[in-house]
Length: 272
Image (cartoon, rainbow, N blue to C red):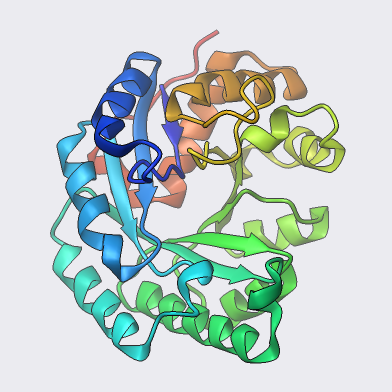
């Protein structure tokens, strides 16, 4: 069975059909979907959806795209929400957090500084509660790594990884796994496919980032967690493995990256 380590199942594109999407993904072999929050306003929605779908869990955090309108009160709200959620078995991580130096407005000096402040404070929350993080890293690999080295959260996942081999190795040394998804399915995505082929298998997890980053056969249509087994099959082809072997390995890697998932899904043995 497959684990989708990053899926925005609460997004408006899914609407009232989110539970049905999760059910279809389950029938397709997706045993768990991790739903990250993006702002304090959707903390309740991701938790409620995760509790309503048997194959879903959630994370709480403030996404860098939502940092411009966020305040110190939001960081306090996050800390309080995390403390309250520690008794919820469906709560598994801090996320989605990180840095985005791709969107022009977020690259202005004051906004870069605010993003880094919010990242550091959320890394501290993760460290204080011994939780892993789901990390958004866009044109900011070295900056994110600098803060992770300094604060040292309990590992996590570098979502939609697209850095260098050296950066990948540094993440792995810091206890992170690297998320691969729909981008890997495009034959023109040479660097991502090289990374997926050559990085140590123990460092890889799978994700859809649905409704975004649709695989090649769906683009530009909406992505869905149902696509994860086919995305996993692409990774298997790139590495010369069977889909069963990749499912077992990435399943184990997801449990290692997000230990609280172990209470929700059983270990998986490799299939031939």
